[in-house]
Length: 381
Image 1 (spheres, helix red, strand yellow):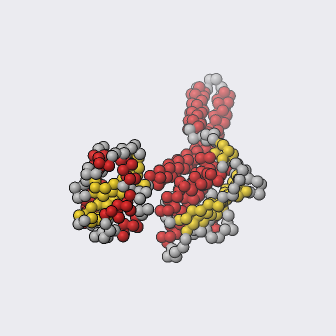
Image 2 (cartoon, one colour):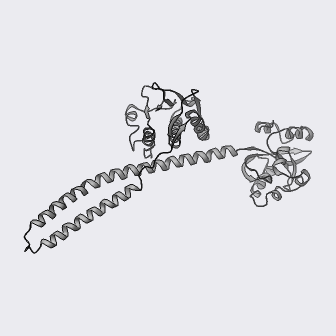
Image 3 (cartoon, rainbow, N blue to C red):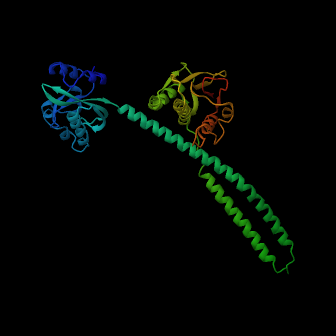
């Protein structure tokens, strides 16, 4: 199989004959092509030819642009010409809909090679479509979690404001009713009796109007009913790991799983539980990233997500890492709203996680006896 490392072996003055090189490229399971200095295709391997969905004689000797008339390929061709002229290897990401209808994102590596004295641009691509899709799904999940966080924050703040405002409103109503009774006790010939009664009634009406506004505002952020279903926790862990894998790879963090087979299904809101898992793993990755910048000590950084049976026969999910961990003071308030050990962070993530878990009949806690990093435990019945 033709790998990127193989290109190093292709010195500018290729000693191998074209027939040998062609056999190598024909057997590759990735697209490979050659183009001359006039931007014309002189070779494509079977993998690329199948994507182009055209007979070989219609591809050889023609510019690639003729196969992608409505797509941006001129930029790619400029890179190829630059490689031929300078000899400096380059790479780019191409997002093209091929004539066979397949949408593929390729990372294409370009190198100059000489064949029988002539310079060509050798291109070989590797599909990164799955990576792009996973990144998009991960971004979508993180955006959804952020939206849930903001929504929950508004819900909590609205409840707090309602409580704080409704108390004095209730007092105003009580005093208004008392004042009206006093007005009725005034003699009929009192010239301010009607004016006073009207003023007191107006105060009561305005207080009731404020109460209605508060009630209406609060109803905007009332919690919707959960969509609970029977969930396979192991499957959810595997899917969550695949979604966040690209972020872990970017920060050089190894994410492993240790899943107990034949776990019982749990009745939970699947979306909320997945958001909790993603949040815990993302926090661990970010902690590793910060620690790496601040530490001169090199080590293998890892996160382990495991599942097991709890003592009550339910399901326990454990997310632990070998990161910097938390101080005792931080550990005591880690689930408090607005607390965060990270700078410029609003500190709602773990508070939301706790709310989601408890809303699904479970509990989440930090194992303070674990001293190699952080260990969060979720228990579900």
